[in-house]
Length: 286
Image (cartoon, rainbow, N blue to C red; front, side, top):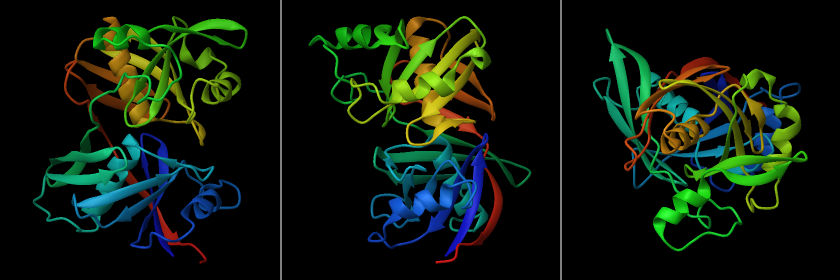
């Protein structure tokens, strides 16, 4: 089986072109993503044909679970189809079908080279049942927002205020004043991921606002653990920060693997811009 490994701000993926929907991809993802006995990656991307968009993407985490959305992964997929001439060389956009919906991407070029990719990540969702998170919530939309922001949750014996938002997948964002490097993410991340209030588990972001244009972030991804970057997590942080008034419509999210540019006007979909590069290609003994 031919594969290509790609990375976007250090969030790395194994990509396989296929039309086979019947294969046990969850089991294969666990084997291929394993960093000691496999290829090693934060997820397995499947590039599939689509009747509703230019391409379709499925993404499996290292534990075999399937994710609804993946911001860095979708940029890596765009890099792959561009590099393999699966779209015209003159094309500057493409559409990708995901579980969370069809996403539009813009290819940003300079002197004929693809330098970055902007992905429309959809509108953030705050209704508890759609995130999903099991907490009480009012019926009016304004109450949805108030309830989802700074909700107190007991974690590791301490009440921490989490911000709940779905970017097609569930996120819990925690803002703190100290450097994110000091946060015990390896210990608290798994606890948040498996909190009983999250029926489908959750991604956990710890963030510190540096100024009105910059936020530093670390992410614990469900099914993967700590990663160098998380695109949908960066979106969730940008959304929560804007709703709190910490930042404006545009903000740079500084992650261990690099920086993503986020834009959200408070009403429409979130736009995320960042790099994606090929690491290597090979064959998996099938």
